[in-house]
Length: 484
Image (cartoon, rainbow, N blue to C red; front, side):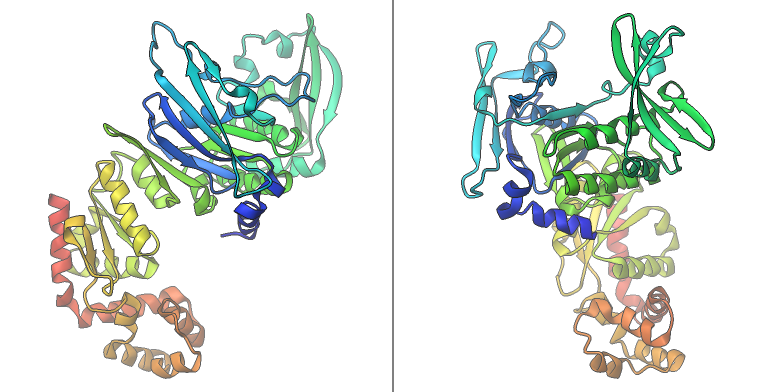
């Protein structure tokens, strides 16, 4: 986890949360909205990234969140949003909300042991409870909030030859630099130019780079939306709530990564709370585990999986493009070991499986549950000391120790390391007081003046040659799972 993510995690701890983020949302309990019933949505980090297949309920959670605060008394032009703004009832949608629908908002207070709960319920055709909500500025950045100017019906305000130029608003150089880092090219300047036409007054973004100046009329959607979103995040009152709908739209992958890093930065500086929906595994991977939520919907309703990995996201969202079997292992060492065993024993299997290094034994087990629930074939292969439960699709490597210990304590492997690098493994581990078997390869690599990946590969190849037949049952189990 990056330093800024660790800082935010500390700021968002229960005891520090109110001091830094005020009356932010702690939890949402949702009942009766677009098929979401009895869903408890807990927030563990200032940024909450919700992912899942289309129709899982991501937008519903974001829209419910943005309705959680009343208008600040000091505001003049700001307009708050209500549930009716997102869940209209009509002949086409007679029942988007059940008769017993309600939302329980849980907010932080100055005493973390006594959070504030506000219930919004539907009485007849009206909603009650809004008056008890705390005040906060809330901004919903959906797909229609920023529309390319050339696609707007009110194009005359931007493209008319008779528009009048009014006041210009310059952006700070630091903000311009942040935009440039996301998009991936340097700007000379960025400003918002006021324009007026037939009584309408609005702003249009204007950027200068490489000696040329161009307005939003000639910007791509991704660049224009970043310009709009970053400006809003920087100029809105601190401790605002933002709901962002798929901010990765029209952004290349490196821009998605940089945007996620920017969100961490702006939340750290300005203490906003952000709820975003996304289909981007790049954004998910750039955020810490506490920020990640996966929504799963089936005939039994909607379920949340917390702290999911980007590998899980890719597997779930790439339905129809993943391989025949997803195999989840704990770490990169296990991944290389399994891959090389299959390469030697049955190379054709490599075309049929996708191996994912997920995390510890619990994360691996959870990943398999998620994949199975979404209709995919998935198994876990965990360390030998954990054991296996084939009925739950949980297998293990042969032996009785974690893979690193099985490999590096093998006599033939130790002999090879001695001959090839002049290193006595047992003495090196004792001398360096290496207690964590995950550090074996890096310790040897440092002593041998080579890369860890080289040591890992050399040792694994030798180990497989020595214990080849011990993997027969595991390979057979994988084949059975593929053909099941």
